[in-house]
Length: 129
Picture (cartoon, one colour):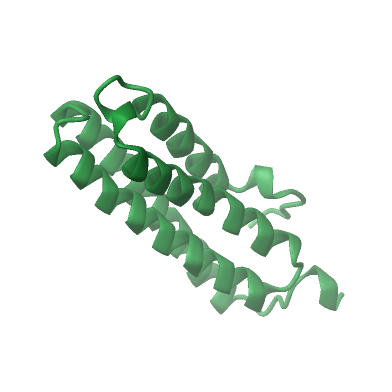
């Protein structure tokens, strides 16, 4: 694996950013925009994915990074669960639901892959160099 110098280079962070952008877009929909509790929750969950990846990376230790990646993966699951609520309430179409659910599943897979890589590597992190 190539050396990553910034969290912005991480594929999982890029995917999380894309999901967050889509979440903000769909929550501006007129029907959705009235459900303040769900908007708040799904936006916070989406932002949590990006934030935890970034924070974990910046801590410079792989053990901490793995922990934050695990939290981020949990937040991806939250986004997926909230998408079901949005679909059940007809705030989003089946097509939007499938698209965003697919992005979330893919991001979860990428985060899991990074966690596995970090656990298998002998690297402890930048702060241990």
